[in-house]
Image (cartoon, rainbow, N blue to C red; front, side):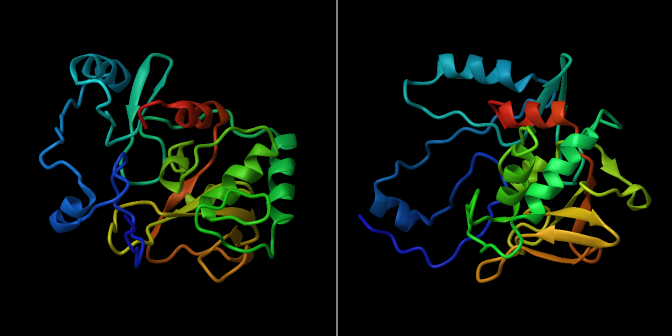
Length: 230
């Protein structure tokens, strides 16, 4: 059965890919009343999800609605603002990685925006960041909201080239981080902005919608990217 899609909007909750009306759900044959939400603020989510999977029927999906990263045995649950919660520092990119990252990113200027594009010839905002850092050997998660958890929140006075800038741009989920750009220094940033546009270098925007700046810590980025419950 075909279902026309007339627009996209971020739900703002991890693990929820789409929301449809009851009438559309009936047309698609989706069962009603088939979800359980569990609140466990002090639990290790990887262990809890393993326990739940043993209890639910075969084929039932289990997904976390928040991101939790375990580093050194300590569970860090992220919120809606940029910056990994509980992380105040760490070893960032090496000078070699930084050069490779920025060189790769700037080589993509002028290429088209593509929703869901992860390169090498078309990108969305987070796809550009992920691809460019991969050229420097740094593993990154795929979406902006998760990339925002890959290092500590920075004061703007400490911004350096290679830091990531995050934004709330989705009016349907104003607290959700839905855009990322790369700070280049000298007040400039690189971004893949929106459909119909191309990867561009523009003045860095710290106005309405700015969610914060993060300096990527590769070990944290790898933990977020590999997190099975994020």
